[in-house]
Length: 257
Image (cartoon, rainbow, N blue to C red):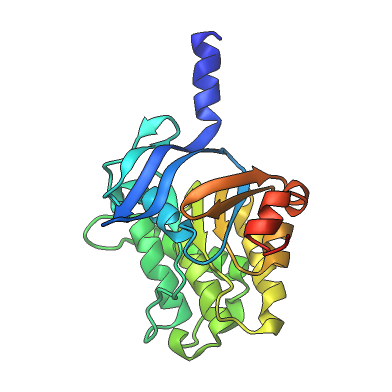
């Protein structure tokens, strides 16, 4: 393989785990994980409770720096970079619990994210030109998340599903190239699952996405590849159909003989 081909192969890998292990005392939360997440791929991360899924996402996001092994982003070793530095490299992370400003309106929440997006370019004062940029970013994200009609609503007073939509908007407004989603449907009502699923699908376009979700119908519908974890290890991966029919997955994850 030529140097050019090697470089192209590296560029096609958004995130790479090389022998990643996280230990909490005698407990190994994840153990010797080796996996390549291709650029533009949508990956579902599934497994029983305690399998190590959230720990792996925390390692990739820079929120769990105490680990062995190497994490690479587009070929660069980012193992020692914190969450803020990784965010600057285009890695966005959502959480199981909503991270919004509940006392502010929806538009005010999004404006803060827009200011963070432009923080390296904005002067101390906000000129009319930058103010228009912020307003345009807020309007675009309101439309994408379906929250235009709720722009002046107090965020903390909205339904949990709408709060989840707002949080996803806050996560993707800085335009991350890599999106790490930890149970984005957790806690939302059954009638909100459809709109939330469509929003995640739209947010995934053009991005590398790692998705943890316990709703199997949703994760199978959204994911191009499924990564199965058990006891801190990756035990299987493949297309949704391949994973559904894998005997080991059916035994370990689905509890079937």
